[in-house]
Image 1: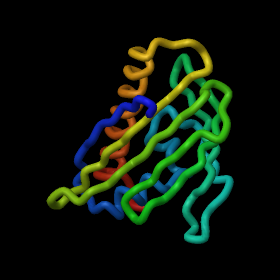
Image 2 (image 1 turned 135 degrees about the vertical axis):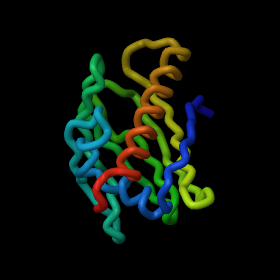
Image 3 (image 1 turned 60 degrees about the horizontal axis):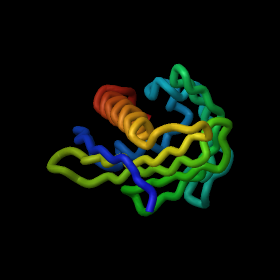
Image 4 (image 1 turned 180 degrees about the vertical axis):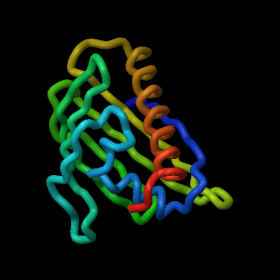
Length: 147
């Protein structure tokens, strides 16, 4: 089993509101920082994104990637890499759980780059990606415009 990095945060909003922001790929460039473009390439019968093209710019790492999304009920979404210029694999998920009046969001991520990199450095990079994504998601949901 591949090693992964995971972190959680509590957001003061209902799970449906949090998932609404996660599922609104067109607005990712407004709140994620690293995502410069997002384009939904395919949707499922429920209208949820199945494939999304993301143009990323994270300083030293710039990438054009396509991810395949799987929605499990109303509180979980996972993704896997379809194609990328810089990555060999990218698997992740958001799991939402009601936590009092808010939502606990757990983000899990595994990244494998095409260039050689020590496992310890990869885990650190995953942690930075996760922490930024969770902080951005929390800020967007708690203070951003409603979709």
